[in-house]
Image (tube, rainbow, N blue to C red):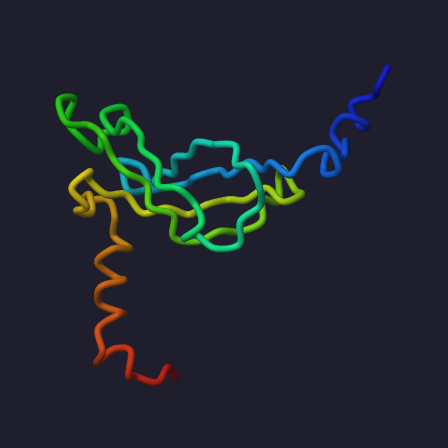
Amino acid sequence: MASLNDLVNLNLSDTTEKIIAEYIWVGGSGMDLRSKARALPKPVTKPSELPKWNYDASSTNQAPDDDSEVILYPQAIFKDPFRKGNNILVMCDTYTPAGEPIPTNKRAVAAKIFSHPDVEAEVPW
């Protein structure tokens, strides 16, 4: 019988190319994080290689019950220190199906400011 330590340190990296991508976003309070995971057929190296995903935002107080779909846009990926291997954490922005940032998506406003040519021309201290 395998010990708990054997199970915790089980190496499955040779058995499959599939990975788990944990999509993470800011919740309805603006102070909490939400997440959900999906399996992907192979490792990815850029957020643009990841599919957008959706969730029902009525449960997170980010949308009314009658129009509660929110789309997750992958923005950054990091190696998952908990699952290890090629698994990843995916930091996401949240948008309506029409492509508008929802109110708790503060990064969309910041990205717009920082991508302005005048700001991009600035040299950091």
